[in-house]
Image 1 (cartoon, rainbow over the protein chains, first blue to last red):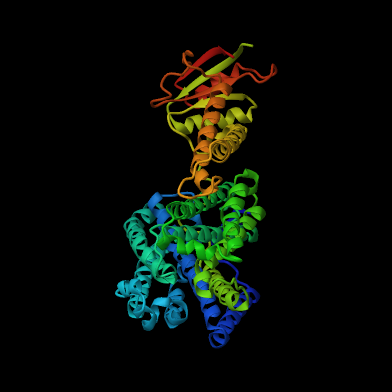
Image 2: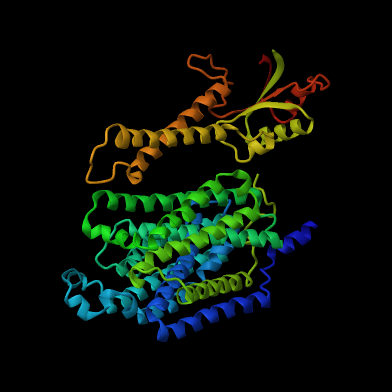
Length: 391
Length: 172
């Protein structure tokens, strides 16, 4: 390819084929249909799936501004040409807000604390009622999203608009720092509201961080899949080099380790101290079929990626790296299932169309939003120098 | 075996990189490059082979993990079982922190040890550092690869790329 053709390819947006587009939209539509039917037939199960899909969707959307902030704050030059993908992920935040408004309808099916008669007979829930109530839940949900969309969109918009290298970093530094600080607070509260309060008697100071680690793992895994996919299709061939894939693999390894570390810290302290008010969470998850899923979660999210990503040749191969990333995305779904399903579905493990439909629908919708955003603009930012290697 | 080597001292990073590039094109053997700070991508430019220390590190880690877990199992479940908080004698969750620490300890120590052995460093060894390379200067060491190559061209090459000092040495 001549230099001119190569530079033209770099400025070209992603070609979003209408076949793929309609495929994703149809899948999302089927997910929505299953959800609507389910609300009448099996409300508990389908709302469990909805919450899983929603949490997964929000996590991926938040990973966008989160990664952008990390890139800007650390001044990561190597990741600068890759930033169109997190920018595109950010555009899913408004849709996440709509899904969140839908979740408010499901509070009665999901959360014990939303039933006044249950709260009345439970001293602990009465004590927590000033925080755990439907109005507070809704107001907080809208507040979180307002902050995320407001700052996250600004970070992404400035990142998109900057055209020269000296400027791009300075302009986004303060905003990125603000986003990180706000995310730390709002995400902690959100994870308590949406997921931890499914077991309203239980609490853990590690919980928000564990959820955030999952967001990092799944977000980076998705970025990697998209980047390697775009590399194979052409436009990013000179940008996503083997070294970049190597780095992505290493960060994936680090995030997977971080997730496992936080998971173990939470589990170990609860296991060791053995206080009844804390052990309830794991007792439920060590019953029946859930007990088999508990180690499976650790194997998929930690052991397998840990061993696989240690091999340099595997990190540097697009095919293998994509497979590991897909495994981590699947692992994140298992992790969410272990967080959300046991308190909603009870001691029996249930997994079928009602739980999977909304999750697959939400992921298909996210994929459609991401690819549509990528098809709108040049895949390589204009401030990236023509030569791929900076040295 | 002692062999002839040239040391070129540079004042700028770019000069050093250019000199490395041309020496490689000419087929000269680069023994080492010295810099006060890490230069991104220089390992690739010099054509350094991948370090095999990672294998040592992995084996060290695995040994540490196995020893750590086995010793805890042996001491708390086999040799002298103690009832602690009603937990089973053989409790894996309790063994993990020490197992992890042993993994890191043996992995780190074995890597450091093999690095010293491999690069022939030991306490009391006379320093062979080239002056200035820890402050503000860069140095390139070039040696004879095979008899055919004219080593006489090397000083000229180094000077051409802006070397401020060129020395000849009989090294290992």
